[in-house]
Image 1 (cartoon, rainbow, N blue to C red):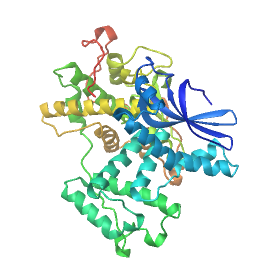
Image 2 (image 1 turned 30 degrees about the vertical axis):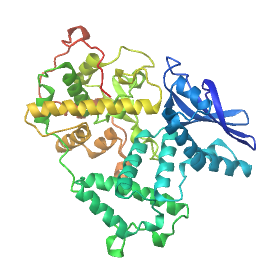
Image 3 (image 1 turned 90 degrees about the vertical axis):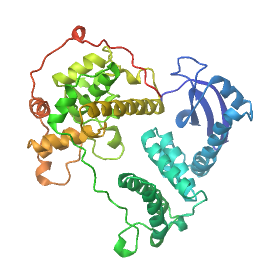
Image 4 (image 1 turned 60 degrees about the horizontal axis):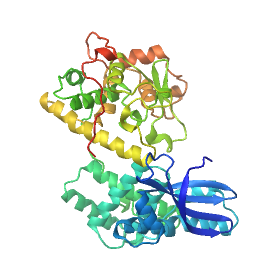
Length: 445
């Protein structure tokens, strides 16, 4: 277990050979005065493990917190830590420790299954668990769903209140607010996930479980018709060849094109790419979104097409064996920081790619269109379905035929991905020939 630097800590628990402290970790902080992450430090039999709280604090506020100050600026941190400790950390640690069954593996399992006593408390527990496991994106989805429920009903909600009728009224409320059915479905599926955990933990019984088929008197989550998300290759050519009026717009346009050509990889993966992931002029990676949710880990291989290399030369970092390919995560060290910066880049790209499509009189697009364009264009060009599955990291399902299909070689990957290109003679450029000189782009947070 890698040991992290500890400047000072506050003890929350010490029984049965297990201690729990809250500590400010400054190992990756350039300036000790600046905000640093707060982590739970749990020690057992001389082994120490850190759990993320999702909170950061600077040196001055940390000293106030350690002194027991009731200053207004640290009250949110004090309250959040106490709630997380009382409702999540302490009950699980104490239960294992009292029974002599404490191990870090057992604790991790229990923390992943924590459920509160009512709906909103269960959401808060789930959010803290996700943050503790560095699943920041998922925690944001649960946070948005909880916020929607709190606006709809500001009172405590018991699981027994969640009947099919209650869910129908909540759906109608969201429809009247003008939410898309994709958003409504996301909120309801997240709510269903909380209900599933409550059922699995015997907080509610199967008879009271409200979700199911409408014909059986249960609540059925609506499914939207979906939107046209794939671009035509002729329109992608217009985007790629558009004369951008500013460097920032050009950077965002290029990142969009890179995502499209790189097997439709999402920005959360692309910005995490490192030079170590490049082998024989191809990028090897796993989708972070599904890495913890699927048993079979599918490694994706994306050939670096000439157009991709131009973008890397233009906007990428200088080579470093352990460094990121793109510069946007430079200087960040925690998953919370990574996620915040990735969201900033996505927001900036979505804003500026819309300026490009507006100038070209094309429909609005976002980073979400890249993956759909990749798969749809290849499918229309009669690319084997098995290749598209492998290139996007999709499970190949239970088809016996697909089970016998091996991986595609580099020549085949280059052949199929080259079909994504607009018809134009490739003009190679070196770094010195790039018109725009790469410089640091400041992203407004």
